[in-house]
Length: 257
Ligand code: ADP
Image (tube, rainbow, N blue to C red):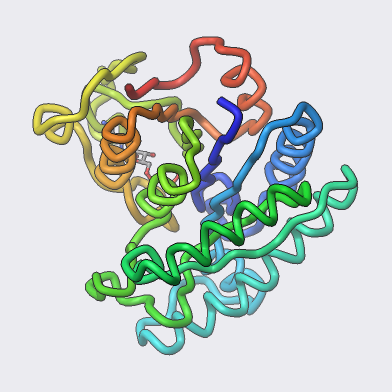
């Protein structure tokens, strides 16, 4: 895979107590910079804006009102991107921020503009760091402008920029035959060739305080990748250097496709 999209969940970036996992961010910066040096195009889709925003503002939980949530997202996004910028700079890697809304991929002109921007960033050896633009839409029900979760956004980005591999890092080792939070006997499934209703029946919601999508949105992302003849690997992002193993073709996590 020459072009790779990596998606990190909030649970990888923010500890359960709300503080920021700087070690994970530093590891990510290191791994992605190394991949760039080896000639790969890497796009990072990063969640965590609200988690980082809450920490920055010294708040313990999400405010209830939508405008306040959007404000926290705006605050957290700029803080998150400055942390990335600082960490990537240690490895002499430049980054660029790309904030997207769903409608971008609907209108042909904005669609083209976005793809050209990705190409131009990658051609200049810059790592695009993508998130949903929460300032315009934070309402999970607002399906017209909002993807709702970065899992699906990362698959949309991957298929559009011609990446055949999506690496999805979460707080779990892979996809299990039952929700591991509820079933102690749940077994890891190493390979899922196709995603169908049977697969969805095994998926549960999010277990973490800040996580949003749970397994369902990750399966939807996998489904989208497979439809486009691509693959997705779901693995534990606790130590992001796991990406080296994935790139080397070692069997970690769950391979979809
Ligand atoms: P992230 O913040 O990384 O996007 P989420 O918390 O949204 O992660 O989703 C991952 C969680 O989904 C896991 O920690 C687990 O609690 C839950 N989950 C539900 N069903 C499954 C399953 N079948 N296999 C693995 N995890 C599952």
